[in-house]
Amino acid sequence: MLSPEEITRKQQELSQKRAWKRMRRRRRLISGVFLCLFGLLLLTASAYVSYQIGLAKRGVPPAPGTFSQEPLELQCTHILFLGTDSTEGAPSRTDTILLAVLDPDTGHGGIISIPRDTRVYVPERDRWDRINAVHVYGGPELTVKTVSEFLGVRIDYYIETDFAGFSKIIDTLGGVEINVEKDMQYTDVAGGLYIDIKAGPQVLDGKTALEYVRYRDYLGDVALVDPNYEIYGGRVERQRKFILAVIKEVLQPKTLLKLPRLLRQIWDAVDTNAPWTTALKLAFAADRFTLDRIETAIVPGTSEQINGAWYWIADSERTKQVVDWIIHGVPLPLTAEVLNGTGVQGIAAAAAEIVREHNLDVKRVGNANHFNYPVSQIIVGSQAAADRVEELADYLQAEVMIDPSREQIVDVTIIVGKNFSK
Image (cartoon, rainbow, N blue to C red; front, top):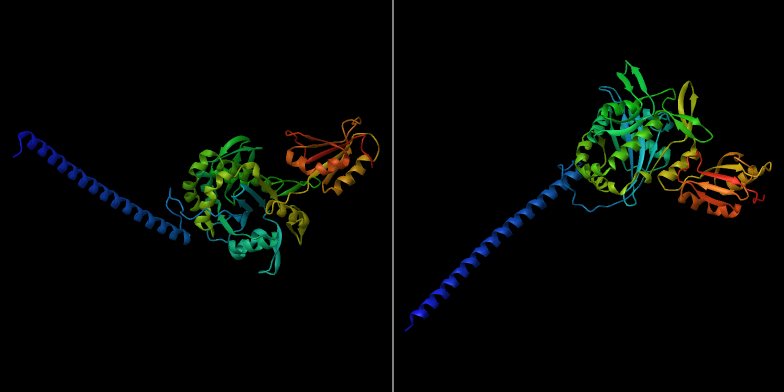
């Protein structure tokens, strides 16, 4: 027979066992509920991702704040941006044509501006015409085909927007900061265009930004201001400046953080054949780009009148160089001036021939600020340029000087010193 003490101890042990069993059942129940909830969450997420990917494959953007679950496949992408002057019920011409190359793997990019009056051959019409008229004949598809053949470049996608879409995109970004170089005043009653923009730094909203890029001064759409130095002016040059300002705005940290969300709003303002997944991948890779790694250029050429109509006639050789530079990363020949620093007649011209043999584009031959240079000098603005003239410097026995604040029209200034021998 158990003593009272043993009975008490047995009761305590039994109570502890019961409490332990209850706790174990409770833990099992909680674990089961948690596993069920976790499984339900995984099932829901899996179904949702599959649904979003299915939408993306059909070209429908996912909801704001969602992300593609496909792997980020980075590759160089060529996109043709088209801005149309569409009006309701009328065929639209392309007011702006830009070919962009984006390499999210390296962070390099480039943009070629194609003047809207560029004369091209359109096989589908069996005639020569302005490139902006191609859109009337065959929409963005024919424009892509024509630009591709004109530049000899593959084009992966197009993105097209009209005046209203352009304004919406700029407003979505919160405006674009730019320094307006001069007062802009213009009135076109028939076209419903009234422009009054004051000079100075300011943030342009969508409406004012559209007026800025549409404004045409006495230079018209594009003009070769200085043929020797290939300096261009006019509306195309202003649009190039504005595009750089937009890129600067997009690459700001405050914009990059909300870019995936903004992308859906921008998507609604454009017409494109690019898959939503491609746009999203580029958006997520935007932080790899910097403004100094994005090159811009205009299709080189000059204005010419043919059969009573004015066209922009592309310089085929220079255009190929621009395409190789922007699209394929082959640097343009450095431009140079060769200056006589010795006072010996004809010495700068003789040096200029050697400089040309080293694949520099000599734009000017003249005199230096004095004739007492004992040693030849090559002055450049960056280390990259210095590396490119290293062989020439060795040949000329010249000192290479890097001046980051250099603001010359040409890339390289060569001053011929007294140590130069023909």
